[in-house]
Image (cartoon, rainbow, N blue to C red; front, side, top):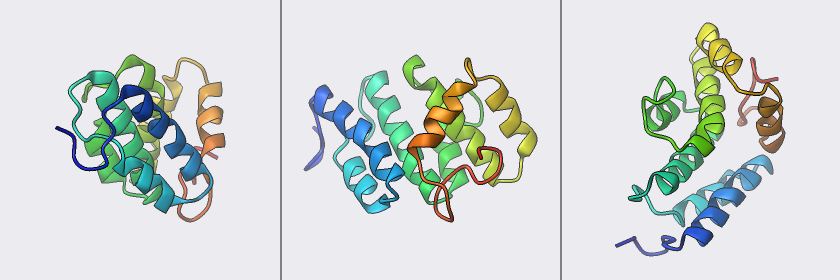
Length: 140
């Protein structure tokens, strides 16, 4: 049974997962955390779990917590099960985490494996730059 305030309905959960990056992109980590709190931790379905993991990675990235991003997404693709629809986002946040840890070669390799280089720009355009935001080096 989901905790108080958790979203059980997949449509509502998807809406929360969609607006979280918007709040993050507006530079509002408190709102992003509030949206995250509405999601169900450890949901039984892969799609929902992937949405939750990537959403947590958004918040961890805003906090510049590379270790938490790696814990959520794994150090390589498929180390942690992520729905195919979320693979690109997972890869971008994983690459950013490697960059924050000073491993530029791993970050560059991951970004080079994106199916379309334009995807990086799409993700970068939705999130803030600056002292609390992601993409300070390889992502700018």
